[in-house]
Every structure is written in structure tokens, then in C-alpha cells.
Length: 251
Image 1: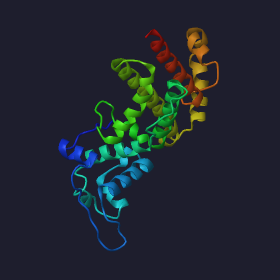
Image 2: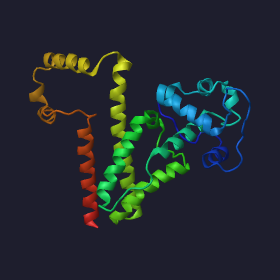
Image 3: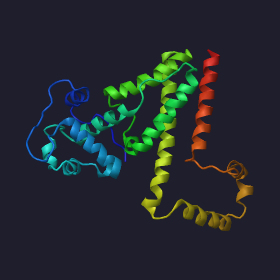
């Protein structure tokens, strides 16, 4: 499931993201909390965190707040704008500054680790396409933080843009693999151990010459560690940083 940002009315969406203009408010007595854009966005994030993006709807968010889905439309016009607001809101969890006194490389490594942990806390964020940015303040703050680190490399704007894109693609890809690994047992009803055990035995049966036919695959799989391990992430990140370092050295 891929969700594209910016599907609502452009002016209304941008005004909500940047809080430019008055917001509708509601104050009423009784146990139900007053509604606001912030209250609705927080409730929607709770739904997405606990049930996934597929379960997100205005009705579901309304139920969490003890209201009807229709009651939310005064504050957030539609689900598309709600997703934009949710996405930008959770990005506020990420640090906006990093200590680069020891150099850009350890700072980028810290950024990557924080960003990976963020995606794993909110896996639904991975379903928001990067093809069209949300253009919210926290999205820009996130970009500002990583560019600020990379500015210390001396690379120019064009090459820095390419490095930023590469870093985000790497971290998002790693987070997606871990997330899917976590979801697979409940989605299929089969544990990872059982899945691999069954198919490993069958592979030996149906492809008895597998090692001879695919010697490089056999070699690369000869040591422990799967695609979703922390070790794999660390190795890949270090190789990526080595590449950036080599690019910097070339000037």
C-alpha cells in the first residue's frame, strides 16, 4: 500500500501543515475532549501505530475520540490531508541537531540509527511515498538536520542532494525489511523458523546440486546473519559512509 502526499486541496493542506490562519475549535462540557486539529492528528497516529495504515479512516479516528467520523471534517477536510498532518507530526520526534565535533561520519551514523528506530516505531510512515514530499515544517527540519551534517564534507549542493537521497533510501529500505519480517508471522500464520526449516529441506530435495550451481550464493550465505539483522544494517551503513568519504577525498 502506497500513499501519496498532497492529495487534498493544496491551499488548505499547506495552511494546516504550517498553521497559518485560524483553526476551528470546540469547547463543550462533559467527558468528551474538545476537538482540534492536534487532537485528531494524535488520535490518527495512535490508530496507525496500533492497527496500520490500512485501518486508518475518519470513522476509526472518530471512534477513538468518542465522535462520529463526520464530526472531524470541520477540522481536517479529508483523509489525504490527515495523512499529511500525521506524517509531519511524527517527524517531530527526530532530533534536529547532531554533534559533528568528531566529524561528519559519526554524526551521519547517529542520524541513520535514530531514523531507523523512528521508522520501526511508526512503520506506517514507510507507506507514505517519497515521490511527492509533504512540505511540512518538520519534514523540512528533518532535511535541514542531515544536510547540516553533510555540509561539513565540503560536497556541493548537487552531490549533497544525491547523498541525502541515498541515505534516506538505505535507511527506509532497511526499516521496510525489518518491518516486513516482523509482520510475516502474524500475516501468514507461519513463524520464520518454520518457514525457513521447511523450505531449506525442500530445497535440498528439489535442487540437490544447489551449491555447485550457485556457488557465490552459497558462499555469501555461509556466515550467520539475515537481511533484517542489526549487523547487516551496520555493515551496509559503513560501506555507504566509506563511499561518501571516498567521494569527499576526490574533491
